[in-house]
Structure formats: C-alpha cells, structure tokens
Image (cartoon, rainbow, N blue to C red; front, side):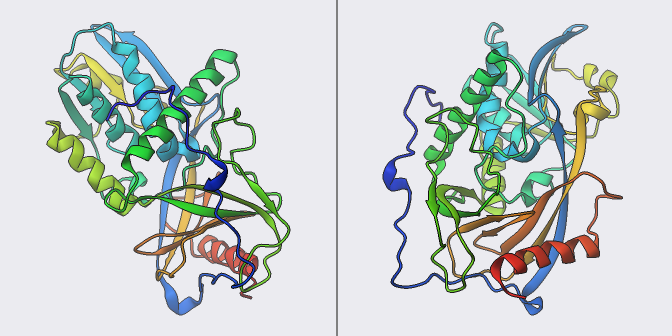
Length: 348
C-alpha cells in the first residue's frame, strides 16, 4: 500500500458534481423522534501544529506523532509515513506503538509495510476509541500548518500522502467514499490556506439546489470516511499483518521505557500532555447527535456545526468545545448542536 507523494492528486474540474436546477435535492430530517443517541469525544489540539519528532531517552528512541486537532483521520496516513521515515536509518526491529486510534493504527500499518514487527499497546481499541466516533470528513480542520517553511512543507507532504492513501482505499468495503459537500457562506473549511493542488476546487453558488432555500455558499468534493466501517477494517489489517496487541495504559514515561521494545512511537494524542508534559496540547470536546439515516449523499458545513450522512446514521455535530466539565454528553450542548443544524436547514 505504499504510495508516492509525487503523484498528482485527483482534484480535477469534474470532481465538482453538476448542480441540477430541475429537481431540488432532499434534505435530512432532524425531528426529535429520529434521534438515536448522543456521543462525545475528547481530542487533542496542539498549538504549533502536529508533533512528528524523534527524541532519545536512555537506551530508547521515542518518535512522537500526535496533536492532529480536527484532522486526525485526514492526516493519519501522511503523519504516519512522516514519522516512520525518522527511523529509516535503523534496521528493521521490534517496535512499540502506543495508542490505537486512527493515528496509532496507521503508524502500525506503515511500520509493518517497512518490515518492522509491531507491538501495539493501548488503553482502548476499536470500537472504543475516540477515532471510532469521529465524523469524519477529509479536511485539514483546526490544525496549524506550522510556523516555519520546513514545517509548512512537512504539513503539505503529510496532507498529500494521506489523500493518496485514501484514494487507494476508496470504496464501501473501507467506508471511504467521495461526496459532494456544501459549505454555508462564511464557513472556514480548512481548505482556504492550502497550497495549490492540495485542496479540492470549490465552486461558489448563489443558491444551494435543495428543496428548502438554504442560501448559498460553496460546493466541493471530498472523502467521507465512516469510522464504524473504517476503524475495524484498519484494526483488522494490522492484526493480520502480525501486530501483537496488548491492552495497557501508561501513567508516566518510565513505564514506557521499561518495555522490551527500544523503539517507541507515541501516538497517544492527549498523552503528549499527560505523559510527556507538552503544555501546548489542549483537550477539546465534540458532541455528535446520531439521527436515523437519511437517503442523501452530501455533506453540510455551517456556522458551528456539520451534518454527515453515514450509512448507519446521520451525524449532526460540533467538534471544538474548549470549555467543558467531564467527557460525557451535556444535554444542553446537545440540544444547541441540533438547534444550529435545524436553523441552517430551516427546520424550525
């Protein structure tokens, strides 16, 4: 599955689906009787962009790979490849990966491709990770690109490599499908500041083609990655690749250094702060309200939220609550998440 970063991305003009004015498109129905559940996830956001760095600690080599913000799924393959290149000068040897979210699993898969035997340690595995409840749209959202030229070049490299990987996985069996996405006027997509050729082309529309007048904004095409399909498939890939899997939590770096493996990839996300004292890592919470699935294919991004039509559910969510008490659902926040979506859809 190794891909080459030099390949041209398929962001062609015909990636934008034609807009039909003849038959207005249907909208998701967000009535109370269609609500199935409310779920929450806490993720790491790191000031200064993703940390992909090799450090020496005693006799061990630790490679950090965390801090992806709202782009964990989006950047997972690219940051994994970038991280694994940091040990290219070392002979293939047993490696420990800490964390089994989407970044840890992608890192494990890349290590296996390069000939390394991997021992995967984590407190939780699919379907019980934060990654398993992500949206997840391919979009470099709420993650800094870096402050230096080399950091921005690295970010572009990671983004390109990730997109190319998702192209190889595209299909229902992985839950990776191209979808049209509509963004309301004024919504930041995370695509605006990317170098040319690294972002889907957006088309400005004065009016969206739906049965209800939603106003206008932009249309583009991207990948929808469905975690209930994608994460178990990725976990199965690394297990079939020979990964040893151990359920274990780590409370301090000394416990990591006691492992038999002397090459350790830290993909713990929030563990960057709790395990290694990285004070640039902050926790943010996201609320997702699951509705019964709707027969629609497009994604919606609007002020303060999004709507993603997955196979199993229609997800209505918001990703970045910086002030919260506890990791679990807050009924008032969940109600506001739904209210925002209903206002956008004019279902009030």
